[in-house]
Length: 297
Image (cartoon, rainbow, N blue to C red; front, side, top):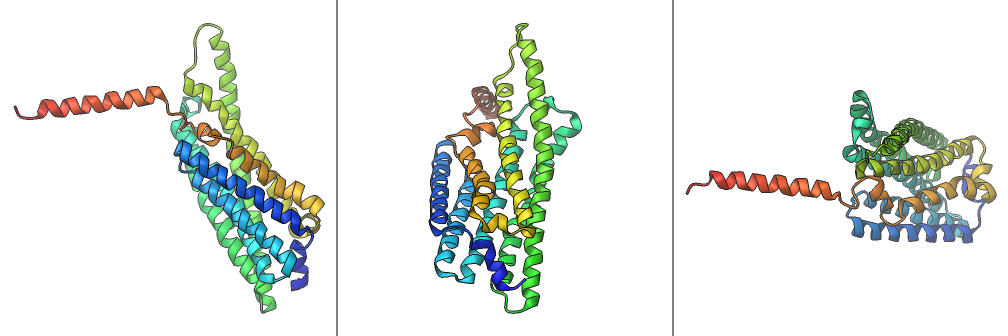
């Protein structure tokens, strides 16, 4: 594949559309910052990073369409790939936090140990196939001075797309099992509530894990189309396919994640559980009383 064919991947859409999309991602970045200040949930920082990568990526796309400099096309590829990886990392981190705060009695003993472990472990391949492979591939493709470097960049780009899709398949399987288990348990709990047994508030909030399932389905669509675009460039070159099938799912995911306090609620860290706060205060008072009893008179 020669450089002109490679550049064809980013030439198809209008400059104005890229600028608008960059602006929308900027709005989501600001909303994530606001949510971070309100909830103090640290993983909103990753949402800010994911949105900012897209802001820079689509600004580079617009600049490329205006100036046609290969370096700008490389920036677009690197930042958008890294942003997609950051989006997926957010979902893994939120599920990991959810597992720490949820009532894991819903799951079998093996699942209680396995699900948090898988959620955390997926971060490693996401970093490898997202920012790392994306940046190296962009440098090799759009800064290629030899056919060998160009071929290596194309192989890395394919590895990054396929790798992120494989990670998504694993995470999709995990979140589907978790969501199904919680919703089935909720249905059984609803039957119990008819007999006067009320479920704890944490159990009622656990069903918000379905939000992660929705985001995962949207990213699945984006990842599948990105892999298809490796072999059929029209999915990226044709703006009538590119924006609805690749850009829109990512916009919807960031829209969901930046709904005020929603992501923190999904992770079960906001609003703080009053019962948990009381138990911590009670434990602290008991510890202080015990230390006081040990002080010499």
